[in-house]
Length: 317
Image 1: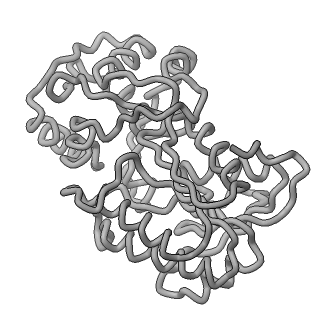
Image 2: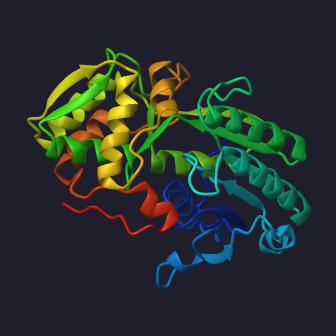
């Protein structure tokens, strides 16, 4: 693989969602390497004061505006997707929007696309998330722009949702439910490791597909136990029937005014789709990171609806 961007490298890149989670990490890696960064974002108002990143609205109903925003840039780093259907947005719309974005990138003269996908996408999947991700990869290939597809399963670090909210629940609930035996594995990668991998793939040649995974493969039960130990929780971990877990999560989500876990997300984990046997492409060990960051995990609930849809639903400690 090509080495990371040199500190004196120059040029312009476009990152979708540079003020959100993974996109922010990618943008930081690029700016630290001397790249000029533009972002296509649904939240241009979230630009931090003094940010060197130029913000453009991510407007799929105006492809010409997308072309103008990307013209003159070298590489598009795409993190755009939706986790679950909400309001008028669903996975089918996200697929169509992605196709518009790739076509605009080609017209703008983008020379490479680094696309963040998911482990084990399949056009035959019964789950819209994984089926949609496979279709997006197909449209990327059809765009004719050279690409790298990076496939993470679960991200941690920074202001992540999954690990943080497991910690938040373990700090507050006397009992924490794990679906089934909890023996399904999770191959998580640190968000900064993913960002460095994206930056390196911006300098690759040809079309590449790589699993973006860390060095450890704990079972979900081991992961929850690790988080419990890291935060000093006394919550009891209990196994519940798999089909019941999404129902329990839905009830708790209603109380929190959020979506904790969808049925498809649980079924994907339980069927091994969050695992990979590929070589590690990230170096940060989840267990060591938990031990280091335990005291700060779960102090505030990370509300997905608030983050992505601006709904006033922040839950504090």
